[in-house]
Image 1: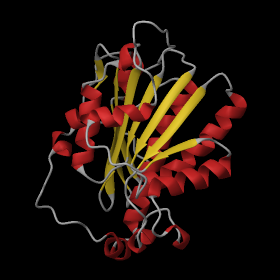
Image 2: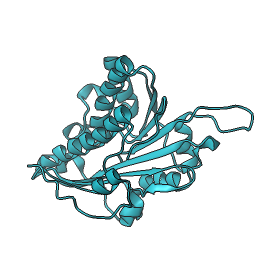
Image 3: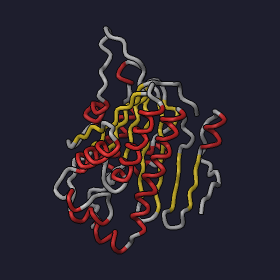
Image 4: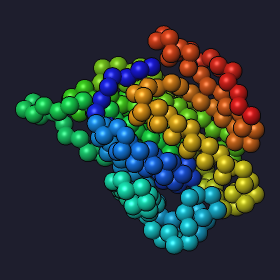
Length: 272
């Protein structure tokens, strides 16, 4: 699926922990490259996480001892923004509803007086709970493009110890073209209040492969963002992966390439 050429992109990433922490340096490097070789495209990159780095995070997430006690988004923005010489905006506030989340795109709403060029908005979900995912789902379904016709791409990555999936949703203010993760997997929106919090440190030590699952999810999300920013193209809808067997399967690629309707058909793509 080829998108219209656009010269401004606003990226909002929610979650800088297990998956998001590995994703930030990848995106930052891409933005550095685009600044040198695709100067006509302006990209705004905002990362959001209200959580702070704890000792247990060091086993599985992309942090070091010196980060302890600091906000995850602030750490990632400062470290990789400085390293790659790109501007990364960090937000440490918890976003409880879709309106609060929408404001992170830092775009003005149509007041009927001023003209604004179209912006491609990209929402990246790298969270470990369905409550946060539901806020992103609500934003996607209530999207109005700020009154200027801005389209929204919503990329969500989720994984367990070994396996996971990445789902790309896409819509204009008028219609949903690719359904988001909450429509493809409705269980992703169910909040389990009785679910016990996981001991990430113990889980990482007993199952070190799940560190690879986080990094694999980040790599797949980055691949989608890379193609989107460099070629204005969405070439996958649903990606399922296994970090233990290195198996990857996709659904929707053929239908997207042919411009037809999406069907939940496994393409048979397998990498080992």
